[in-house]
Length: 516
Image: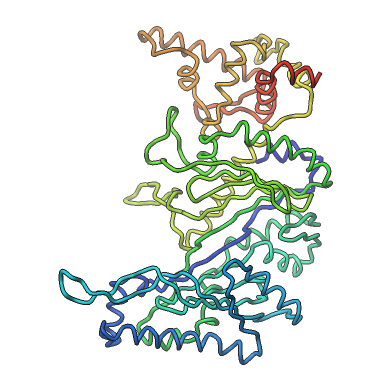
């Protein structure tokens, strides 16, 4: 990320990273699977043959208690028939009409898909069974102007297992934090085109990550489902909170919109022409072998462009997760990681005295790790984008490369960047598969030589030859060694120069003549 920021340092105000859209799920885990609900019904003395009547009573009690507060406050309850209608837009319109500054705005109700239960007969055992099924039921959307988070909604499923979803926005929340902190800003829709104290705003975004989510979310759930204590009695069932979907955005704020417009075209072209499936997998934290893709990583990888009202969006998907880039409100360049399926990601855990990598969990207890993974994804993507097309002429970029240099008392020859051998070496070390972990001498050997070495002497000769080639690149500042390891990384300057050389080699005579 730093190389990207350094490249545009004189053209930007700064950058901030933090939560954008968040969707939490509150689950009554004992009631969220058939076996647990069966035990609960046994505790309540409800027979399976009476489950239908009992479930309807629970739903009616839940619905009436949830709506009672809205009716007492004189807030509007609206049934939404159109499944394509934007509930948030409707809530905002009601808020503007009624001038609501804080508290409940309205309750919107809609019949939508849900996971619930039904009692079915088992033909083999000739007994009734409780089964979890997909069906439809009434959902209640409570929209609030929250004193801390700003505009948010709490969606309550009125049928068992009474699941709750809470949707809020980190940038909406940030604006309220900055108001209290006295930080000036220019907000446009869901982003900030200017912030008077970038470091202060970033610290506020860090505070969001370490929030007491269990307490905050449970308080909202109690507001929309006050009948829960009557339903469960002393069975000690409470909501377990997980982060179902998250968006982590890094916003680069440009000083002038025309400068972002000038830079965005090359960035889009670079993303579509130079970033392949391997790169996208690594952006999102997957390990990819040198050749092929491991069966356990058999995920669909796609990249696409889409024109949106606020700008052009370039999006790369790996399964249900994605990373994207788009220009917002003329002056903001946003890099955003969206995580919808944490089972596709890995996180370290300590088991039996050692650290092992397991699929990440959705629980809010892992939210700090989730933020770190999201930021790392944005960083890798921005690092790759730092090598986008440079407007500096190729002659100026490569002038020093063609001259001999002295490094540590040794003379290194000049490079021929358009020559076959030197260009091939640059192509090898800049391969996207080394973007995260770097490359070793043996990695370059495997690509440089054809077939395995005949014997140990041949292997030593190859290793020595590659060592000299890598020293040559280091002498010219194109690569650097990672401290304490045998691995190398291409420098930010190296990525910029190599990308320009590769573009020139790939261009045809017509393109070169038109650019001359």
